[in-house]
Amino acid sequence: MKTKQVMAAVCGTMVWAGVALAQTFETNFTFSVNAPVPDGTPLGLTLATNLTVAGYGDSAISAVTVSLDISGGYNGDLYAYLSGPNGGYAVLLNRVGVSNSASAFGYSDSGFNVTFSDLAANSIQYYRNYTNPAGGMVLGTWQPEGVNIDPKDSAPSDFLTAGQTAMLTSFGGTDANGVWTLYLADLSAGGQSTVVSWGMDITTVPEPQTWVLGAVGLLTLAGVHRWRSRRQSQG
Image (tube, rainbow, N blue to C red):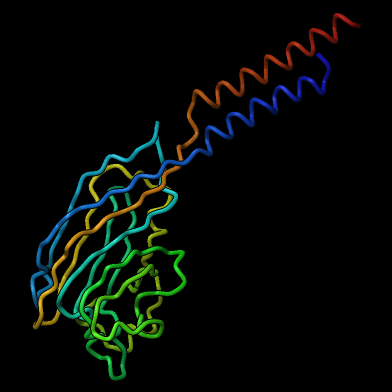
């Protein structure tokens, strides 16, 4: 076998293995809840679910989006985070609208029917800069608030300067299988929010499997050995 023929066979094997390793799996989960968030207490509502994510072998998360449908109450009262089974922590809501100006208690709008994605154009933290729900439900796709500070005792100015440090990208590279926890709290008395439903879309990428890497190595060695044998017989 000529050198370029050997290299073509080896490259073909590597391309095949690369395609196998690059394949992604997307799994969508939706959970009907219809449960009230306790009003005016940090005890909150904890929703935990044990998930089995599609794929083969050991898979690592490459992307996560979260949907959240909440009715009633006051949006500025709410605090919500998502934690993963094997690492990762994202703050979805943290007293949206709180600042050291007229919104020291957060926005008084009522309800969310939104999707959270780190790739969205704008953060939900000050959504009134981009949309005016006029007291109604907030819709669309938003970045999580990501502001990882104490929602109860932090000064209003802290919400302006803390930055986004707890995002959905924190789940990247972890195993998606296991118990995911969504926690919500209403931290100011008056008006009660209800979690209608929530969900996640999880994209995973299989990690390199031993059998694939082994096959690439064996086929490569076989090709080189045949090339050497042919060269020796011709010599």
